[in-house]
Length: 390
Image (cartoon, rainbow, N blue to C red; front, side, top):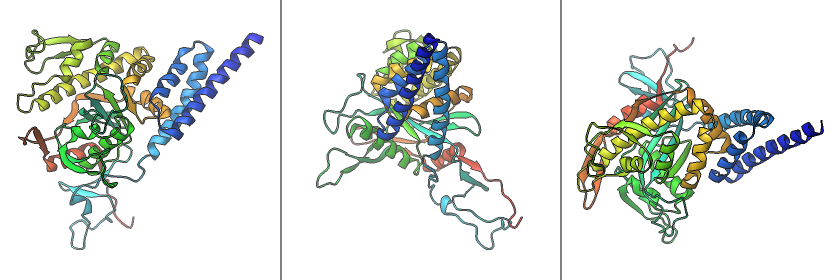
């Protein structure tokens, strides 16, 4: 009985530590290192220790779900022109009342699906662990930008790849004069570079992407230094894929169409390399990044079903390379949900548009009609109309 009492006290202490850490993170919003420790506690024990950890996970799942649902409550993109359309007298459709937020597109009516959760994943062009920037331009460029869209209604995941060379307003944080932040036109990849290289840089990049997508609500972000790619690939046992273009200048056997198994440094080379002397090489690299990410996600999902501790291992490996605003309870909720969600590589979308050569660097200009079409397909749902008065 004494032994059981002592064990029970240990369990209670773990539960208190878990709840205390979650509460502290919600207050301070600086989470990345604490998450790894929390998750390690949850899965480190055996027997009764695992049981109490799973009870704590259940509490966090509910809390995380509620927190994510409350974020951006009532927020929605503002698509141009169509978002302001209203039904007027003389319209052929008079059997219903027009509601705020509806848009008409291709003879159908849509509304923003506020059940969707959207996360911005940034790949930062640094190989070292995360550190505060030395100066206002040392935050690192976001060479990979992916919007991960989690739809609990359809139980699926879609991903939108954002072209790094997309021209937007860049706010030069850290270079203020008279409390005014200079603004320039530049490639969206540059925005992360201005700031502290940590939360400030991430929040600036999130705003840039949200603005590009007409004020799209973004529920969370994770900025991961590229040095983590090798370790992530090793944890899932490697990534097998078909080489999309001739890359023999990187590895002699990487001919177009060759089937390869990527591990370690090879994985980093595949997603990071581009020949800057070739026009639109960034677009070709983005296609490779999409391909790699699709295989990695599906392999990680399959591996996690066999070993539930894999997300913990991955997070611990990533922690030193990552800045995120996703809290403990939110992370636990997401990890338990997406395993059963459908994800297809064909549902990684690329922005349409035109690339031109600027004064020094390539500039990508989106096709905004195509962007609006993409947003409606991914973020909106068709309205089921009911006759007014019924």
